[in-house]
Length: 185
Figure 1 (cartoon, rainbow, N blue to C red):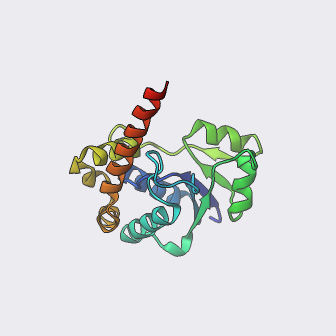
Figure 2: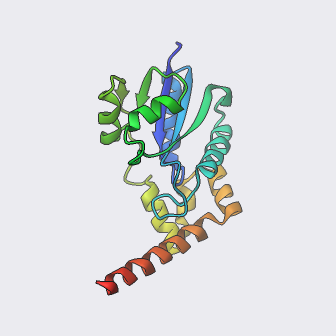
């Protein structure tokens, strides 16, 4: 089997559902490219962690899961911009050659299939439980139950970088900013 597969995610933060998906893709291919989506963003509610922090989460978690890291490449993939509106082209330019993309995101599927790329779905794993949005909300509220939803290696990394505190700080800042904007109207 000489299949090179691409998986793109934001991993904000990496959680056990992501790990389940990545291990599924690893069983389907000989080499996996993990695209770190929205790589140009950090310190926002949707994207609190930098691309390099997300790469660190992935390396630590995959290593702890026993994944052979020589079969994995990590590639930052920025979102399209007015200067570079063709996101599929960004993906093709940034990534090593791949044969197939695994994604459940409708927009990603449409963009890549439009340029002839084969896109296959990934079986969901307890999606109602494992959601990065939900995990960020738990972090923002000070609810430490988020630690059960991420790999131990990610939890440890979050502690090192004060990740939960950062998410709460970002949430509070964005709430203040939103209230200020409402008053200006």
